[in-house]
Image (cartoon, rainbow, N blue to C red; front, side, top):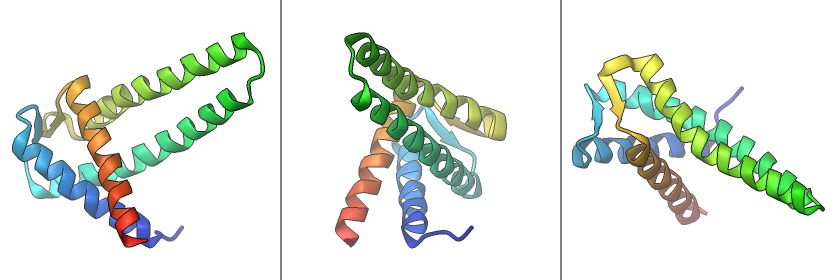
Length: 127
């Protein structure tokens, strides 16, 4: 599987945002630049999977025709949105242990939002 140029740009955007978070958010820790590169790569893969899953759940929400179906799909969107942050925290902990910390739920949520907004901004700038 070949990397698309936008994937490479996303990776570099993630590296920059992650290292800014390490510098300015005390809860976000990386013991070195190599670890931040590897963490950015892990975040890129994890967030791509989350975006695919979230897209499927949103499609299910839009396709639901009954009120209970809409409510169930809406709850599923919430579970994916919140659960993905916890999954990212757990994944980083399993892969890197104490050498990398993204803080808690609030800091990882802020980091993910900044990653996705930065990615969208750079993609828009390049298009």
